[in-house]
Image 1 (cartoon, rainbow, N blue to C red):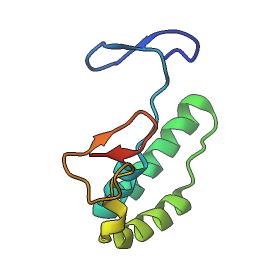
Image 2 (tube, rainbow, N blue to C red):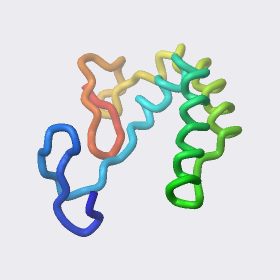
Image 3 (cartoon, rainbow, N blue to C red):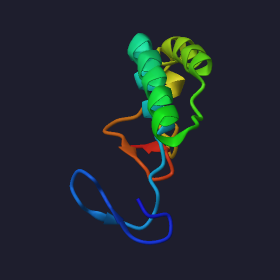
Length: 102
């Protein structure tokens, strides 16, 4: 990805001119539904970053705490409310900024 020009999706090759933003809602759902896999993947990413980049921004302990908190939080309807209408999400779209809306 190019931070200064047009990039293309590695899967479909569609062009875009912004860096993607992680979806906080999807992140929370994945961490809450699959806490063990989430922590395992955090460890793998940390190892890969250390091997290829020489440093890593991944905090495995934080990922474990996040997974534990998300497991409780995803059971709340508040987590799945539309950012626009404040109702329960129906056919949600993830916006480029990371918000979810109906």
